[in-house]
Amino acid sequence: MKKIKTLVALSAASLFVANPASAAGTWAEARSDAMGGTGVASASYGSGVLTNPALLAKAKQDDTITVILPAVSAQITDKDNLQDQIDDISNKVDNYKNVIDDLTLQDILFNPNGSLNQLQGAAGDLAGELEDLKGKTANAKAGASIAVSIPNDVLSVAFVAKAYARAHVSSSIDQQDIDYLNSIAGSRAVAGGVALDAAINGSDVITSNLNSTASGRAAIVSDYGVALAKQFDLGGVPVSFGVTPKLQKTWLYNYTTSVYSYDSNDWNSSRYRNDDTGFNVDAGVAADFGENWTVGLSGQNLISRDIDTKDILITNGRTGETVNYKDTYQIRPLVTAGVAWHNDLITLSADGDLTETKGFKSEEDSQYVGVGAEITPLPWLAVRAGYRADVKSNDSNVFTGGVGFAPFNRVHVDLMGLYGEDQTWGAGAQLSVTF
Image 1 (cartoon, rainbow, N blue to C red):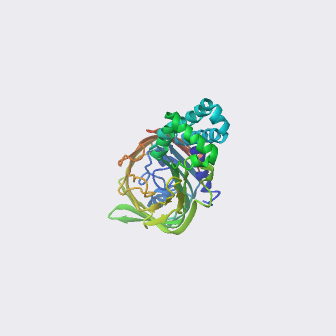
Image 2 (cartoon, rainbow, N blue to C red):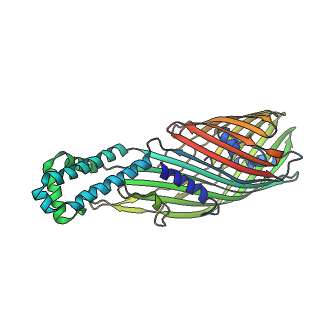
Image 3 (spheres, rainbow, N blue to C red):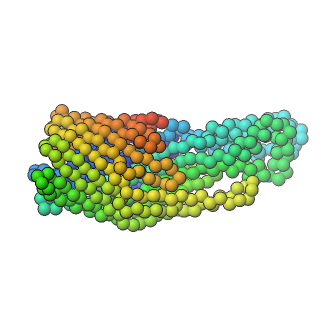
């Protein structure tokens, strides 16, 4: 678990450091994240550029420049403690190799019980670990955002840099590995033959028969854009339109290797990493009905893009066959509708994705709905809660919550946390300043 936590932290940090610069979508914003991931109709003008650029035009007469510096969030799902188990595999393999390397003809001929017992025990332990690892996965998300929003009666403008990262760890356990190791553990004759072969020809004759793999796929997508928004009066209804053209850079990681030599520190190696730069656009619309109702529609990444990972070739030691491991990351339009009811004390919000959230082709798609509430008992204090669900049942459903502090109504500090099924947890924070 600690290594996947490190991965998420490094991914989030890299948005601003390694790559000069989660939420369910393509943004991180602590207030919206605390309210079930909603925000298409309920976000403020200062953060609207992240969720729905049309909200940028909803600034009030006395609203001034708002700077978000920064907003960050992370979410982890690892109900099986997969990273710990892969570490255990490495330890078992080291023990197995040490036993094999220590085998000598003298031990096999004159102390067969001691040497074979060690070999059978090590093989059995490793087989058990592989059996337990089959079919398990772990997932992580992270996001970060910077925004400067400048309201204006003629045309509101915002500058935004945001990024989101997602990682997926899985294993592909070869049943023949388990059968081979169990045959050693369960038969003195087989163990003796294997031990004799290793003593004469070296330990590689045994370890070359182990071909299970582990895969770590990760994507970091960063956007740099300028949002423009304008409000119009259409039949007595204030309607806002916004658009964010943006430069989009993507880093993909395809770390696929033998499960017996897996090391998460190798993720960032150039051997497994490639990048791509392109153009994309976000757009949105929002309308106010009366003093209390707002409805919105946003479209993120309206230009579809497919980006291939690097090809990773792994040779099967048993058959000599070379297998090509490759994946494709899909950037697709994410269209979300939202509605909010609000007054000076309470905000209630609901969002629903009209399209699926896609990622790597090897993973299942998700489609999210969320509800949230905010209560402002004091001018400087807000309390928030919400719930977010994946209607495709491929991602964990989570409860969210958070608080916001706004001393002097100039500095805003927002904190959020989430917890859900399959040992999913996450946290986020945001600092914003109004001038």
